[in-house]
Image 1: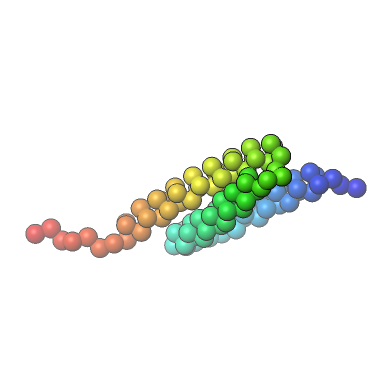
Image 2: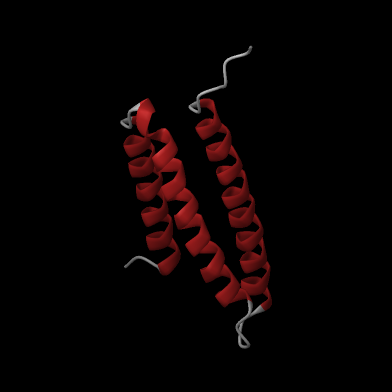
Length: 98
């Protein structure tokens, strides 16, 4: 019989390999929309981590891991939006010099 930890690690490894395979198959033209989607997923992770960290009955370990999740997801969201904005600026037409 497997434990919750073994099952969690199995799901994590499966999701990692599946995610890598999906990302590898994406056309370069779709990287910007894909990055915007992952920013949205990270934003959901921020909300979930805040809910877990702020729970009144949360253990110290839950609070520490929740804080790390909030920090990592927030960094991911902010940097993802900055990179997406920079990529979109590359496609804007520039004014011709007089």
